Image (cartoon, rainbow, N blue to C red; front, side):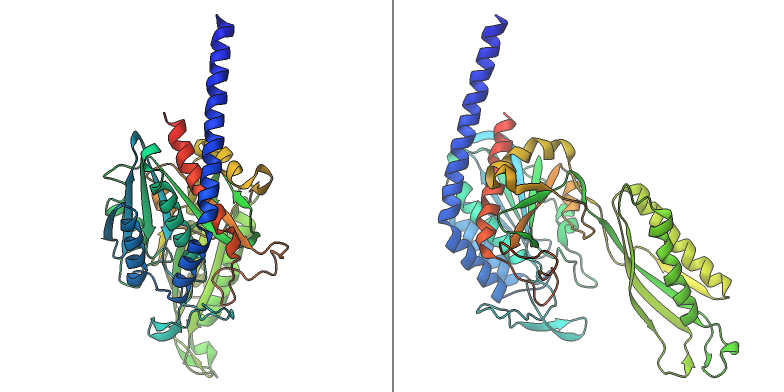
Length: 434
C-alpha cells in the first residue's frame, strides 16, 4: 500500500513538474515575442521622464495599455499611481507585482537617440530629468508581464494585482508619496494581497543574470540633520567664539567610529555618511551655526537603534564638550525599513527564478546598502525582491556607470528575462498554493 501511495505521489509530482515546464516554455515564447514592444515602451518612458508625484503622462500610458488588455484599472492612487487587477478564470491567491515610475533630477550624458532632453524645476533650480535608475525598464517589463498574463487569464489560478508606483525616490518636499502612501491608501486590500514580487534592474550585473538574497537584502535608511549652534566672532579673534565649524569637524570625525567600533560588521554592514555641511558666509567670519545632513543605513532593528542612538549621543556630547549645542533630527524627512525577503518564500520561489534564467545564471548576492521603499509592502505581506542584470555581456562591474549618475546605461536585451521571471513567479506561486 505504501509503495502504491509513493508511486501515486511520484506520478503527481512528475505531472506537476511537466506542467510547470510546459508553462515556462509558453511564457518564454510569449515574452520573446514582446521584446520589441517592451524596448519601445522603455525608450518612450526614457525620452519623457517625470519626477516623483509628477508622472502624469507616464501613468496615462500605463493605464491605457492595461485597459486595452481588459484589465480593471484604478488611477490616482498616491497621487499618480496606477493599479491593474486581473482576475483569473480559477480561484486562488492574489499575487501583486510592482514597478516604480519616477525619474531623477539628473542631466543625461549618454549619447542615445532617445536620451532625455527634459528640464524642470527642482528645489528652486532648473535641472535635467533622467531615468537614471532604470524605473523606465521596470514599467516596460511589467507592462509586458500584464500582456502575457492577460492572454492566459482563463488559466490563471488566482488574481494578479499590477502596482505601478510613483515617487519611489521620495516625494517632493511637503508631499506624501511612494509605497508607504500606497499602503496607507489600501493598495494591498480589495482584493487582499497574499504575496508581492518586485525586481530592480542593475547596471553592474551582467545581462541574462539574476541575483537575490533571502532576509535583509537592501538596507533600512534614515536621513539626518544636525544643527550645531555656537557663538559668532571675527575670524581674527577665534577666542571670542564658540566655533561651530570646529565642533562640526569633530562630530563628523567621531561619527566614523560608530561603524568601525560599535557595529558588528561580521554580521551586518552599516553606513553613517555626512553628505552636506553648510556654514558661514565669509572667509574671516566665524559663523553662529553649521548645518549638516547625511544618511544612516542598517539591516536589523538592533543596528538601527545602535546607530541612531550613537549619532545622537556623539553629536550632542561633542558639542557640549566645546560649549556649543547640537540639535539632531533623525530621521529628518524620510525613513525606509529594511527590504526584507521572506526567507521561506525566497526558498519556495528560487526554482522559478532558476527556470527563467537557468540555474547557472541565478546567484546569491551580499547585502546592498542602497534602500528601496518596496520594503513598505513587505512589512504587510510576504515579499521577494530580486535584481535583474542590465550590464552588457563582458562588461566590467567596477567601471560600468552606476545608478543615479548621468552616464547610467542599460543593455535592453535583458528585459524579456524580467518578464519571464515575474510571470514564472506568479504562475508557480499560484500552482503551489492549490
